[in-house]
Image (tube, rainbow, N blue to C red; front, top):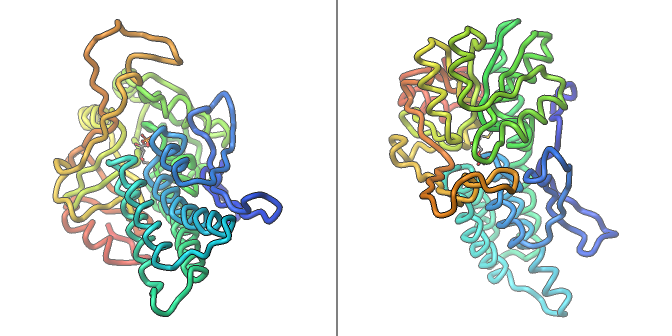
Length: 375
Ligand code: MRU
């Protein structure tokens, strides 16, 4: 990793401590408690990992992919440990079955971000490469853990690259807008949409970031504002419905957002409210940049219409900070994501370069190449 540009916070990590019982655990920063409390969790069971993803203790597309990968490694270590405690020996076939069952459990936790399913598939392929006839449980454990660490390391490296490409679009003195949290808290590195901002700041560019609060779960207010403040990036928190006014006043020159899934034609799913921001951006002639690693690109889906949109608990809308803000019994809708059509997107920035329209060609090209710039 670039030793000059470290993530401002660690989000998901693996613990190995021979003095602890058990000696392994998955570390997560509990994002539901931010910004009031900074609490690190040590999870030792895959059910706790599933709960952490569903309840948004860990969130953001790349971070949940990395967490799911470590979740499989954890499930394997846990079952090996349980067998050892009971004085039994676990067979390789049973160990692999445990991985498949855990993958099913984790796959169901959140449907929209494709990074989750992508990471699980990659882990299962790695597990399958350990052949039952010729290998051992110890070899499977080693292979699975190595794959999870590789996924995390690749994610961190992708963040640095997205930062470099994205920063080339930021001019000294710019004011930017971001929605939700696509920062270090959403990845195992610097972030996606915030990586260009951290990189531009490191390059000495003066910038200012307007942060949409991002109702109903307030990822902007609770997480992005906290993360930017920690990194000394000048920022102003606004409510979602203020964005249009600041655009009209000429206070925003570019918008950087992340994505949970990008389809072959360049449509993107991201946090609810991104579509409204995109429409406003077009009305004001402001470029909207989507920053996401290639693990977020789902070429199997032609358009955004095919993206499954997570519907979350109505309670997230009817209450705020534990207080009811709506009449009991009122009908509530709570889609967690929306789809922004490709024609509203100025460019899609990945670790492989900057893709522009026609995305149906440039994204294909981008997924096929490594380390070249697509433009
Ligand atoms: O519900 P969340 O908090 O997981 O939603 C997160 C987002 O929508 C992010 O913008 C997206 O995952 C990109 S994160 C690099």
